[in-house]
Image (tube, rainbow, N blue to C red; front, side, top):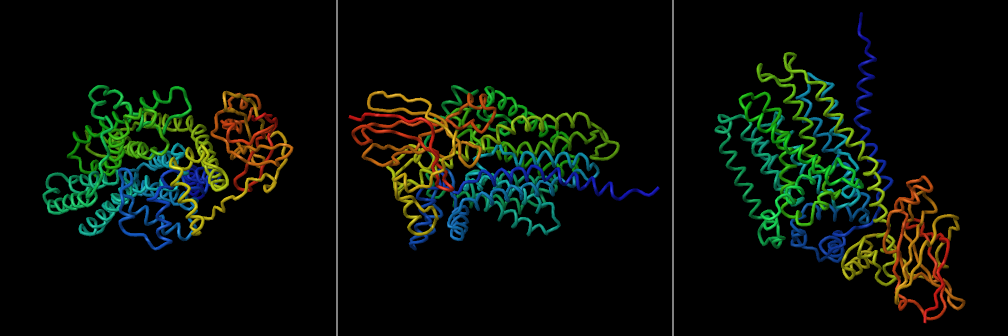
Length: 590
């Protein structure tokens, strides 16, 4: 009987569709949640200020080279200036670049992993699916929605494409220069980018054993010289951060340091809203680190098996990048506490280790030490154990997925509140939301925002009026209310909840007005912050209320004298419409 060609084609289509699901889901989420507003570091003089210098002809190479925290963002600044000049610095394009960098990482993982599973297509598809889940996980919410965080993905992309170059049939000289160029790109993208020189060295010069190293000793020496030359240039006039107490804490509280390291690695697979998220992340991190160490030990014992080690070395490099990145973060950030290690922007580093393990575990599992082979029918058949391990990863991802999607939505709401503060930057006095959700230095924020607007570098169209009558009103009922009021001394504390009139989500922002018989409604303040309203979620059985709570502190001295009525309004930053909230507060401001 002849084989039916339709069934294999259908299975390939089904598998391909399954592999694309994580990237498509993330693309939909980013399309929904992306907000065009610079955030924190992007408002600094060495970021937003560069657009001003570019427009006024004052930009120099020194501005591009200037140190930012521990990094030299030469490539990021150059790229953002070029892209921003074409798009009026629309952050949506930078978010799209981050997504396409993740796509490049996923494609490189696929190409790099194909040879190892040539004889085991089912295992190859399973590993690739798990890798796709990890790379496109919404757990990295801040990295996905914060434009400049594209730099977090660039070093990993450079390492992966260097490994593909080493697998190619190009000449040794071409491989050396290609990898060196990618390592330079990695170095000047993010502070841990210099690790590319370190993790690529063993793959390039040690993977073929002692004899192979002797043949490449001159190339290895040139690689080390290039690395030290880059380091010398990078650290010229470098301002090393002041001691943060890491070494003292390492000596006095070693577990706190170790816990930060493990939480950093395990964070992408935990629900950050769970009461035991730190404990779960610690356990996952310990398992990942121990598994990677055990695999390294096994490969050392089987180092004479060149077919196996050739397959394993690239993934050892990727896993080492994740481990070393966690160590760097631990030395610089562990004094902030283990909670800081759960920051969503750091997810890609833990993902690097997980993707490496997803390939290394099957490599060793299918290897038969007795027969010194890999992937042949005589090898071991640990299908059940591997399926169980893969199921655990998928289950952890699935359990954390709703919370990670929620984290994306909450971060979007923070960005929308920041955008509302930006729109009212010229109309209102400094608001707590400005320094909490845009940039902590209000003077720098105001200076750069006004300059960008005047020079046409951004299209923010800042609001110039505070008269409520100048805004469109959307009298949608049941969009929220002032829930509680309290007066303490000269301060008035208001809190309540608010939903968007146009979408079933928390309101972008809440505006506050005062009025009297002699004063028409005037906008005088924005909400300070949000808080969770689990009570409303339970009451209305709708998660749209989860971040609908708001609060505001008002100083009576900032209000006109006399009898006043204070009201709250839900504000939409896109349409600039206001929607009245229920209840009001009456004040006799003497």
